[in-house]
Length: 192
Image 1: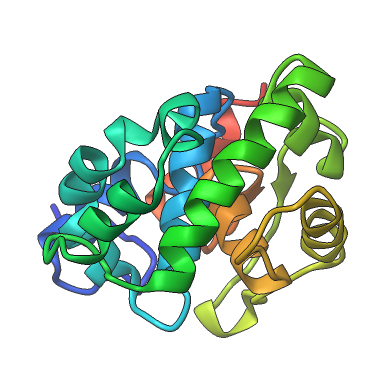
Image 2: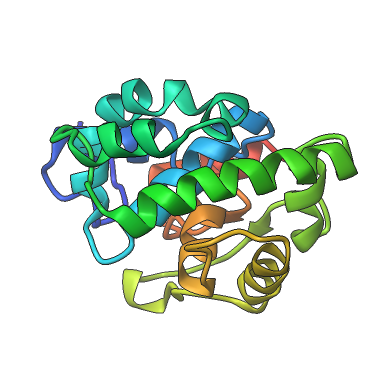
């Protein structure tokens, strides 16, 4: 029997797998949070499908999203990344990733974990929305705007409110599955 799910994965197997196993599941692992921060920044102006297809290439190119290693990248390494056809070769986004890794490490030092820092924007527990249609789902929120402003003050780039909201969705800070999607109830059951 076919499961009822959000419409956005369409018939793309990679998108369906991501929707059914990852999207909206609360993430508290710093490395995984950094991965979503990087991937959502690279998604700006592109489709999530494009990013998912290149995700393994991103993992290889960016040392499995290890912020400690990425923070050490120099001009030579950045040049290598900009010639890597397996990723999105956008100079501003690559440079922002290195800058963000450095800022990420500072946040970890200040708060103990990036997780402790980032989840404070929603009071430490996921926001459970009740959208009936995809058209109701916003592209940003007050929490995303607050997160964006604070991240920018801390030296992060490519963290506008829309990117922050996409990050919140990916990291399970909000449950934006539509209410009749089978994942909506599954994810909500994680909070009981």
